[in-house]
Length: 385
Image (cartoon, rainbow, N blue to C red; front, side, top):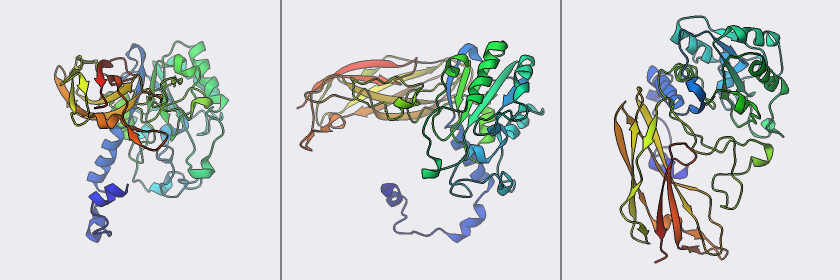
């Protein structure tokens, strides 16, 4: 953060130009906010191409965060803990949108919505109508969110959601043949349990912000192909919450969704990885290249993540994976793009028990897009000298 402030010149000119105040909330700012949301929405599961939705389908939307700005924006907006129940969305004075508004602007029709349960997941009016209405629908989208909050006031002691949420989604799965989509609008992961298997599609929208409603609707209806990737490991169970993707190589890493996981609506395939040398030595970086092919019908903003795994490290257990570099580029339908990264031996150094920065030789796997079905691997050898 300090480096970024330095790069932006904030230390030299700490105060903003007051003349810029008239641009705050401008159409340009709104579009920047929406573009940020568009690039953060993560498609995690899409069995039988249940997504994108069609404007001609009868979609049932369920959940409180579908029609709320504050629940998709979170804390540290308006107030530290976010707007209160008394404030609701009125506090935004129209400078915001909701996912409901986004859906209606895309379809041109009134959204079929049942709130059904509170933002904390407890059943309310309409809950007992959900299964009946789901039978009439082509697809049902459950929105799972959380109450706005931050710091100690928002501490939780389990990753489990309210039982009413699990129960109603399970009932729809068992008592109807309607495909189920889970849409997560959460500041942190909650355990999905069996719902991750019962659902045909899962989208993690995170907290897309006050103007995130339209981007979420666009992602659902295929206005663009999702391109976000998981920025953290999404655990299945409470005990997994502290485990990261760079856990020691001997440790379990079996989250619900892994760091870097995500996909779009296009079939993206990768060439084999090519390297300028199979030998990596200090002071002699190598280039790593891979070509991504868009075999789909939509433009794709494609992120490519390069990981390394040192398979053997003298005296110390290496990490399962380490993200070394990444890039994100637009690829037109039927086109390809070659991504090239640099990899140095110095990046593989680590601190030993004596606090010395050292290098340990051995075989290294380079993995492009680890944890995704289209990942590719190349082995090289790391030398100490």
